[in-house]
Amino acid sequence: MRTTRKTFVALSAVAALALTLTACGSDDGNSDKSSGSSVNNSGADAGAAAGAEDYNAQDVTFAQGMIPHHKGALEMAEEAADKASSPEVKDLAARIEKAQAPEIETMSGWLKTWGKDVPTSTESMPGMESMEGMESMPGMDHSAAGKEFDKNFLTMMIEHHKGAVTMATTEKAKGKYGPATSMADDVIRTQNAEITEMNKLLGKS
Image 1 (cartoon, rainbow, N blue to C red):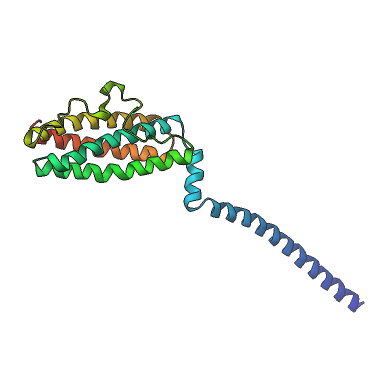
Image 2 (spheres, rainbow, N blue to C red):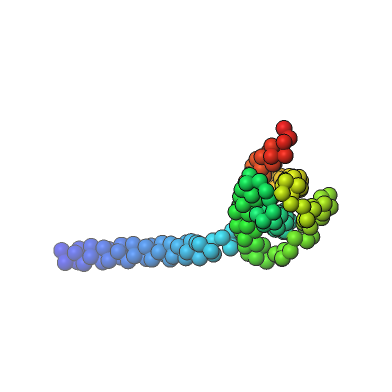
């Protein structure tokens, strides 16, 4: 009788252990799926997954419009590096290039992740029709030099920045993709500050 009781207790313990192991195995399986998903969504995969899911048409329009717009600004900045007479203008041009070149790369990455076309030139900027094709900088006298070039550059870049701020404001209001709306916020803050700076350089209040 005592032996039977011991056997029963032992079998009960084994059964309990088996149930515990089964439960753990089930938990591990779920953990592996969760962990696997976490691993798969880490790093570049995570960026691709998020980028592929959390964007809307406005985000695409913003990136496809801002890339060529930035490229137009870079062309002007590169010209200013050679032709500007004022060290303040040269410094401004260098800062514009430093800020906007990485943004072009970032936005190009978004579009590739989303499977959308990446603009390859400064042409066809969505939403910029009112700026009379600012991508080619009409009215900018490329033969100007010295102070005349500085004045021309600042005047055109102010209008160019205003266009970027308009595009960024629309993105903040209607965009869905967090990094894009965050970049739009940076564009608004940075370029409004540069507009103020350029107006001062032009002697405007």
